[in-house]
Amino acid sequence: MRVKDTHHNTRKGHPSLKVFLVEDNVVLRNIIADALRDIPSVEVLFYADNEISATNWLSSNDSAWDLVVVDLHLKKGSGVGALSWCTTRRPEQRVVVLSGELTDAMRQKCLALRADAVFDKGTEMDDFLNYCKSLAA
Image (cartoon, rainbow, N blue to C red; front, top):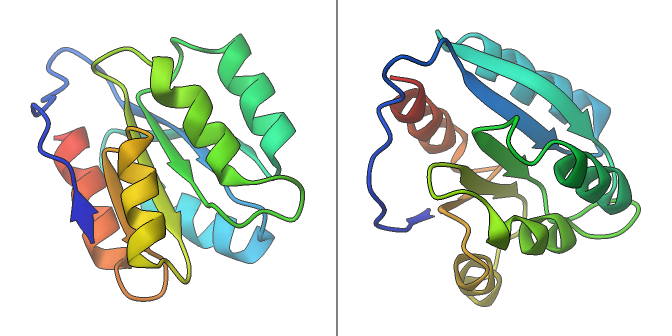
């Protein structure tokens, strides 16, 4: 896991952490969404299963979300496109990469594209959920 040092957003006064999920695998998407919903104050707003849908939703809802969770490996397009779109986000918004088979080079690329954290689906799911809990606190 790699996490960038950024200021902590305690979200005081906010009823929930609003999450947008970019994941094309239906089973994994449901598992991730259910795990996120189990965290108090987390609301999964919407999901996209491809790059075009993700960037369209993000461009139409640029201030509606607090956290975007991006899988890099999509059946249509790449999560890198959604991640790249998020480089112009508001300072309090967070972007997390949750993907499989992450190389050190890909982790570094994600951080260079302003991902706040990068987690491997297979080995760092608990770390990812703990990160989300800290944002929702």
